Length: 364
Image (tube, rainbow, N blue to C red; front, side):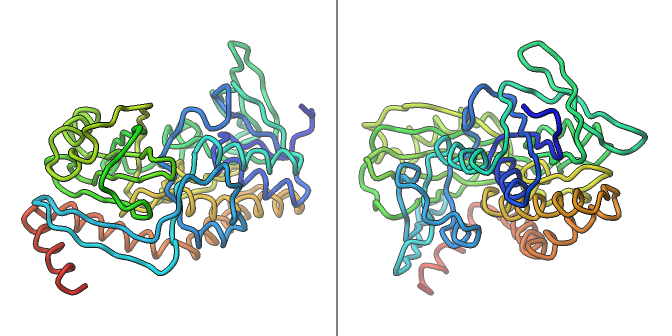
C-alpha cells in the first residue's frame, strides 16, 4: 500500500467501495480498510434493488452473474390472509447476489486505483485537536496508524467512529433485527413477483418476505422490532397459513442476521476531516429498510466532496458541510416522509392493516 494516502474509507461494503471509486476516478489516492477477510462476506442484506436507482448510479446493467432475478410485481398479504397485488409492464426491481455485487463494486474501485486492506479493523481515529487526521487499524493482531487527509466512514451500524468523533449516532429505538435465509425450493409463487407478509404475529414492527430466484431457490426472511428474529422466522416458515405450504418441502441453505436502522438519518454527517455514509449515517428507507441505492447516491456525493476538499486543501467542518447539504437536498424529504409513514404503520393494529389491504384490493 502506498504511504501517501489522500483518503481512507472505513468499510468495504457497497457504500465504502462506491465512495472510494468516485474519489479515485477524480484522482484521489484512496485506501479502503475492511475488517473481514473477504469483500461481501458476511452478507448484510437481501439485495433487493431498484432498477431505476441502479441506472441513476450508472451501474445498470449489472453483470449477469450478479443478478439473481428481476421483478415486475409485488403481492402484500395482510395478517388475516387478504392480498393485494401490484404489477408493472416491465421489471422495476432485481435481486442480486450480495457477495458478488459487493465484489463487483470493489473490482470497479480497484481498477480505478483504490487499494484494499482486508482483515483490517479500524479501532480508533487519529485526532489533532478536533480534526480527524487518520485511523488506527488492527490487522490480525498488529496495530498500525494510517495518516490521511480525510476519512469516509462507511462502517455500518456499529457507530464506533461516530462515537470517537463525538457525533450523534443513529436512533437505536427504531432499529429492527433482521434474519435472512436462502431455501432450496419454493412452490406456488410467481417467479417475477416479490411477496410481503404483514402482521404482529410473525414480524412485529416490520414484515416478512419471499423473494424467488431464477434457479428455483428463494430468499426468505423478516425483521422484527421485538423478540428473537430466528424464532419469528421459524414460526413463519412452519406456521404461517399462506407462506408455510409454499416452503414445507424446502430446506435452509444458509442464514444471516443484520440490524436495519429505520429512524431516518443522523443529525450531522460530517466533522473536521470526516464524512459519514450509508448505514452509519442511517441513510436507509424507514418504510422498506432498503439502504443500498440511497446509500450509494450519498456515497457518490461523499467521494466528490472528498475530492473537492483535497483539491482546495480544506477539511474544515464548514467546507465538508457541503456534503451534508447536497445529500439532504437529494433525498432527505423522501426519508422524512418515509419515517412518518413507518411510524404510522407501526401504530396500526392487525385489524386495521387487514382493512387497509382489503380497501387497496377493492380499488385495484
